[in-house]
Length: 275
Image 1 (tube, helix red, strand yellow):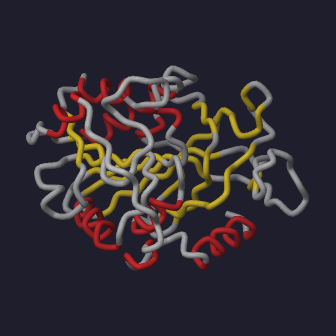
Image 2 (cartoon, rainbow, N blue to C red):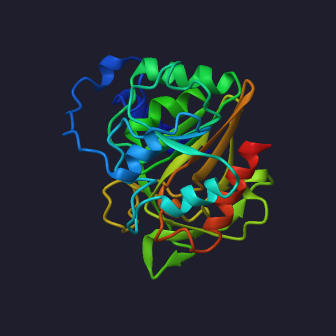
């Protein structure tokens, strides 16, 4: 990656975007507890589930509720492979992750503690799969960093392959050879962050070189905003386990799963995790 991106990411780290201790997030306000719906209660009672969605960090959207921005169709793809799904509403720790094969963190608004990050790192190291879908980058930055995947604190805009002329809605068409991207021609994103990798992780989907860091979010390219290639999907094999980070959760939402090759991307991830 070019120095501009590394510089902005360095600023993110200095500002506390990545965590090294629970204290870094002590100022995050608590959210009001909402009574689980009947479908959520049913999912929580499924103690034999091998695929678990995190529901303990104020996730904005749900894999068990209907609605255009929820993940019920994606959850259905997982169920179609014979896997059971449950929700976890407790802090992430060794006990939470017992008997879990795949843990999915989709769009959390509340950050994870350092202890939770270490529990997830041990989980992957011991053979677990971890899928992280970004809606807000800051809550998951510390976790992705544990696996050599660094997330930006700025949204990406594009000049190429835009959707309906919107610079933050665009198609990604540059893919590396990997099981997660097998057979993909394009995926559609709708407001994405940027990724870079180190420590053995790798970017497998990226923007064109005309993309830019939209620092003031005005969707207008300005001279002081870095223009370059940004990662959109990154993978890592850590210990015995696998990690996939997608810089936008929208491709997995009910409304957008059918766009471009988003559904195939979801299927590829599920298949890779089962291999």
